[in-house]
Length: 335
Ligand SMILES: Cc1cc2nc3c(=O)[nH]c(=O)nc-3n(C[C@H](O)[C@H](O)[C@H](O)COP(=O)(O)O)c2cc1C
Image 1 (tube, protein in one colour):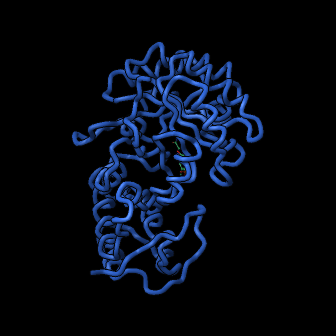
Image 2: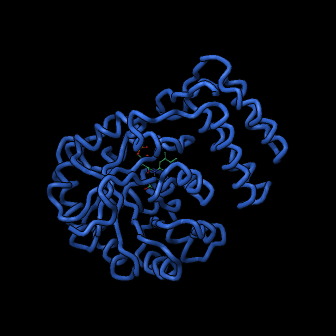
């Protein structure tokens, strides 16, 4: 079988609003080799929207980068693929799994994936026009019956998919609940192309279970890496893994957010870095009052003054519930 990713690859998922160049650079510092742009809307790309064009940036230091496209209209998709062909990517992934309303109302993402014949028809437009190998990212279509998802996977393979990433949750589950690894496994056993398992990898333990239960040797990580680029090291280092200490956490936050300022300019970076800063603090025992201060950070000086005391590590073990079901993340004391 020709594979896109070498066995054992841990791939950083496309994350809308997150996986920009500074974000990917942060993950790469901890061992991430395979990463994606944010999901790019075919309509915006076909209109040559400048904000969308920025999402196509690739750093000179990025040895491998995939681009992810989403869309529901054949003509816009065809046009968008032509735009992408003028850029430099290693693969083009087509999104058939995004559940959010903004995407669903355009009959794209998971809404398109839910009608396999339409999805395959649109997908074949992408494979016919793309100069890059094309892959698909899907969700499972039914938790109790593998057949609809197997049907979709077979059609995508026939339409030219070189690999399929399967998020083992149905559309209405969004990002919570069990990951149906047996359905991922059934897809892997059915198609002749590489299948990448996705869903619920937050720790070395969940990584091992997903690999074992799905039978896939490559996995894609998403929320587990948000504010936690150390995950890449954790998943590969085994027993030798040392979680970050306060100094490490503050150091990486500083570097990541200063790179955002350099990349976007101070005003825009301060707006979009707030969620990134909060992710670094999630699940690590930092006090809510400290998190509340993040919304008042207005400039580079505020940011640096906020980060400095984090070097000491969390003051106590007051854990507050987080937006996503992140597990508590371990920290070690400063050396
Ligand atoms: C904030 C956020 C943004 C996401 N953006 C995208 C996206 O742009 N494209 C995509 O295919 N999936 C996207 N996803 C889904 C993830 O790639 C992944 O499939 C999902 O989170 C399940 O993996 P996890 O359980 O490891 O988080 C997003 C998820 C989150 C939480």
